[in-house]
Length: 251
Ligand SMILES: NC(=O)c1ccc[n+]([C@@H]2O[C@H](COP(=O)([O-])OP(=O)(O)OC[C@H]3O[C@@H](n4cnc5c(N)ncnc54)[C@H](OP(=O)(O)O)[C@@H]3O)[C@@H](O)[C@H]2O)c1
Image (cartoon, rainbow, N blue to C red; front, side):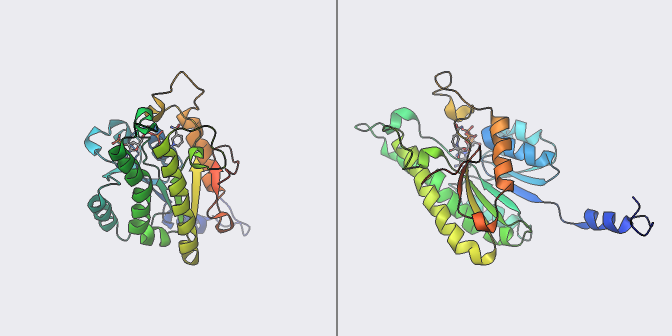
């Protein structure tokens, strides 16, 4: 490479090589959308710290090039604190709170609600992402991009609710949305951009109960779309709730 002065541009290259890699942490990355986040960010050349409840069984994740696999259960707060301590001093540019559960359609029908399952769904989908945000806020604050992203769902949109269904899951994502709004306000002064992205109905294990009964998006494509939406987040947009196709989802 020759610069305007006719000199070889080694300065540029040494600067680029010295720069810290963009680092991403993804929860629930052993399968489904989380696995795609890990693969696709790694394919960009980003450093990916991908977490799984049981790394020993995370074969697909471990096979992904350029991915560091760590153990983390969002409901085991000691495991969250342990990973945050292990990664102390590591700047995390994009933290993707992806791990989530649906609770099973039959467990959340009015008249036969399974309350212990409701607790599990709220702990995983709401308490978990908040705990992750608290545990890793310094890692994100120390990064260049400073992005804290939540994988939500249009099912959490009160304004869009059609018919009664999924009492736990819908309310968990609504609560996650409010947690995220709070985080956007709390973390603004630290320059941290917070956002909600939603994949739409996507063909993962999560949708096994309805597979074949409704159109489902391809996980690779939907994750690529969400990554493109995450790229567009700025501080001005912090707190927004965005569908995979770029549409703003009404609260
Ligand atoms: N698929 C859809 O249609 C759809 C639509 C809207 C929103 N979403 C959201 O997208 C996210 C990913 O869903 P998905 O479709 O990829 O689901 P999935 O295929 O069922 O994968 C869920 C992931 O979350 C992990 N997980 C569950 N509980 C966890 C915990 N306590 N700690 C850490 N990880 C945990 C699972 O790990 P294990 O393998 O250990 O269980 C798995 O890696 C979820 O937040 C979901 O609500 C999905």
